[in-house]
Amino acid sequence: MSREIAGVADHRKAGLRTGGQTHPAKRGTRTSMYFVYILESLKTTKHYTGSTSNLEKRLVTHNRGGNISTKRDKPWKVVYTEKFGTKNEAEKREREIKRYKGGNSFKNLIKPGWRSGQTHQTVNLAPERAT
Image 1 (tube, rainbow, N blue to C red):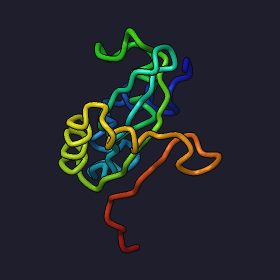
Image 2: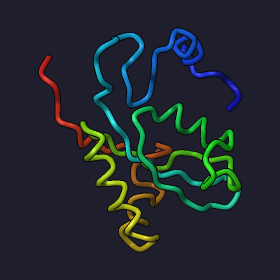
Image 3: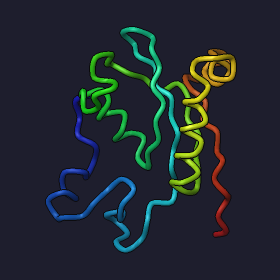
Image 4: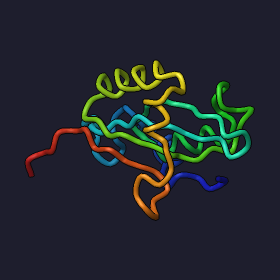
């Protein structure tokens, strides 16, 4: 992916932070959605598990070689995600998935055909907000 994520460069110039920090459009508020994700290398079919508050930006970072653990096996695609309301919950789940070490529990998360026609599964574990 060679395109710049919309608005990220402008926010950096203004000194505002993105990701798990203050959202540029809502200064003073915190990002409230966090993701655990599993990537699959299109080159080697290896998998990588991580967590982030900005999944699109994180995937771009992986595919540009910005992570030492995934640099060698790029390009990557997302094959599984889960949503959480807090960073702590997401990091706890990330550690749990990493403990699976490719066993049956891990394989069941990423198995193809979980729903016909979809490229990856998203599980929403974040509490619903009252509007």
